[in-house]
Image (tube, rainbow, N blue to C red; front, side, top):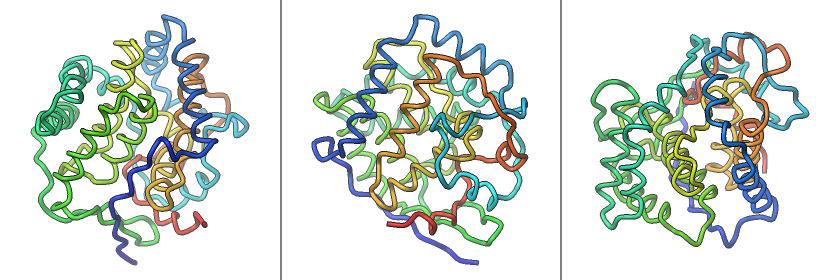
Length: 287
């Protein structure tokens, strides 16, 4: 059993991004720009089929799954399948997303923070308070627990996120994914941080790419890929390797623009993954 402390990651500059990351961002943008008008309606229809209950996933050759996904799954304590998460998050974003997008381009970072808190509260169906104490994840099956960065660092971090989300010279898809990682990393609220991070991602994409109904089903695709988004986020956070995150995002957009239906059986462990669970397996992500 052990407690591992997370720290705030150094903000990755677009001008210093790897060739692989740049290529993945550009490819993701191509998927968005070429996606048919019915993409959002088709995604919502897929979500309505309760995809996490079907017992199917995606073939490895698709590239959605992180190389450590199977090992990650084996470390997690069982959790109930939670279908419908993205449908709920989309409804919240439909109601409050424009306000958040406006706050991103406004001068006051406090408006941005309030916008995030609104998403968190409505996503959970109850008032969510800013985090003012040290908190951590639940322990995994090997007793590992992760403590989030100190609460004293949150306000300054959110001010930085606000400023970076409005950088028009940086591709919006890049900003959206790094912003999602930043919210996941600093954990600004007592609860609801994962869904708030996902809603921020889609809010930025909606405004920047002119798709007002867009919502990426990141919760479901994380589950169907054995926790791969979680692993990619932590690999970026711990080691500064961002390409796996943008590979996941690009594959997500590829599926949304094409066909989201899974094609192979899933293990029981995979369908019990929650993207906010602990991940001592990160010790296996080597330099």
